[in-house]
Image 1 (cartoon, rainbow, N blue to C red):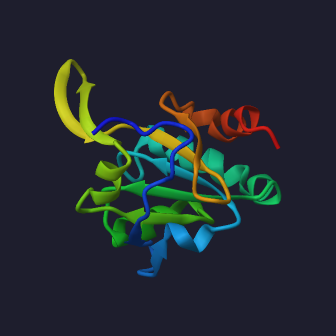
Image 2: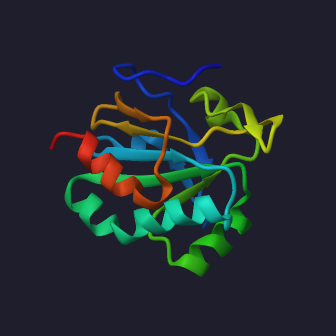
Length: 154
């Protein structure tokens, strides 16, 4: 499946977060959602991205955004990652890759010259009505919050 485009309804999802709580897209109706897909907890690029979102979390919340991360890691891995870096947002365990497949973020990628299946680092911004309003295929891991805020007119 290919990456989804702006202007369409975001696929609904249900998954467990780092605390084992069930999280659905419908829970965020009325808020903008930064839904970011990343390869692996506690790796350099993923940590930079998560920490940038953490460092700017209050500003994102003030502007009406919720932040939700998704990776194929399990709940226990997410919990360690959250505790280590004091991440204030939900990290969803997509161990069966169903959310990633629905959003087109699981597929072939080139890793060190080798074609492998993996997470395609992508962020979707979803509006208050569940419509995708922005897709980031080239995520600036160390400045992702700024990238989002610059692209979304408020």
